[in-house]
Image (tube, rainbow, N blue to C red; front, side, top):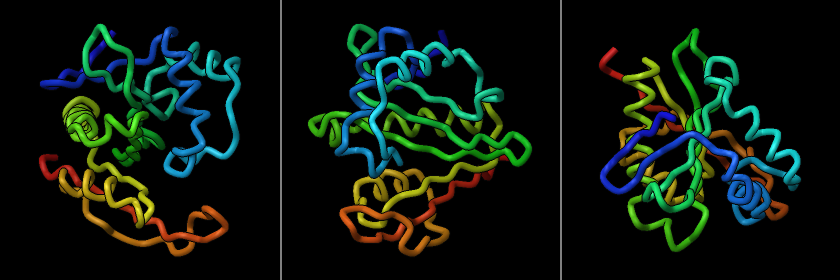
Length: 177
C-alpha cells in the first residue's frame, strides 16, 4: 500500500475496513452539495466500490484517498483526483473532511498539499482544477492558499435549497513542466 505522509496527516488507499466510513460520508446529506451527491448509497454499492478500488488511476480515471491523522486511527476525510485526463495531463480535485471539529485543524491544507505534490511529481500532471460554490469561503481559501486561481464563474450552476448558485472554477498550473 502506498501512503503519502506529511507532518501530521497521511493519505492512503481505501481499504475494505473503510466501508462504514465511506458509507457514512456518502450518505451525509450535509455534504452532498460539495460532493455532487443527490441520492443515498447502500452498503452493497459502497462495498462494490471498495472492491474495485484496486483499479489504478489510468483505468478508473479517478483516485480516491483516505485522509488520516495517524496510522492507528480511522480516516477523517477523503480527497479525490477525478476526471483524470492523461492525454492533456490534468485532473479535478475534491476534498471533504467529515467532522466539523476536524475542519479548522490544518488537516485539509496538509492533505491538499500532499495531493498536489503527488499529482505534479508522480503523475506528471500539468494542471489541477477545482469546482467550488462561490459561497464556500473555506474551500476557496484552502485552494487559493496553494496558488489555485479563479478562472471563471458558472452562473446558476448549482441548485441548492431551491435557489441557483454560482460555481467558480479554480486552476493550478504546474510551472515546472
